[in-house]
Length: 215
Image 1 (cartoon, rainbow, N blue to C red):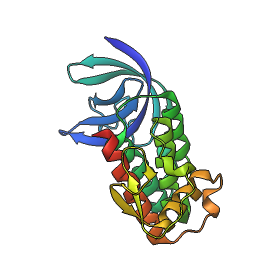
Image 2: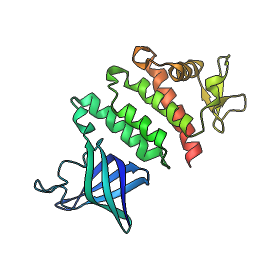
Image 3: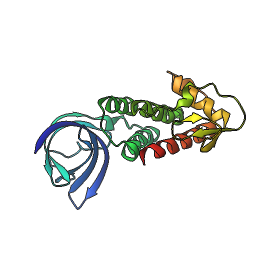
């Protein structure tokens, strides 16, 4: 079977002396692509299947993997990695997709593209939380706490719906609840200042929430 589709390259793995195994996000889901002679400078695929690139490819299924027959278009987002911080940010976005995304959705694809081309600079912990919240909303599991008025000093989060409740499963501080709500409502993440410890705890709590729903 042959199919023409758009892919987002998430990871590149060396397979033998000359070949590459690519992990990619596409309308077919998260797929494996075997690029024959992808490491040879004279190959027509050399330098194209780099992490972060968006490609339109003609693929043929060969067992558990797909094999590219032709490249129809390349958007070289890999060229945005001008510094280490930008590389780490884009790598985190791709790692998040590999770890958590179980299905394809065109809105998710566009959202991940939007975040890949962002340049968070020193605000990337807050951008990570914003991406997670956007992912949860598009996945239909937006945490209820985002629309709750929460008071008290000792709070608990219910993993089933992301609400703050007395019978919650894990403890969460008021500062972390405020941090999640503030980032969720903000349209200018780079201008937000939040205590680093709140950002770390917020990301940890949201990851536990994702794990609960994706297991």
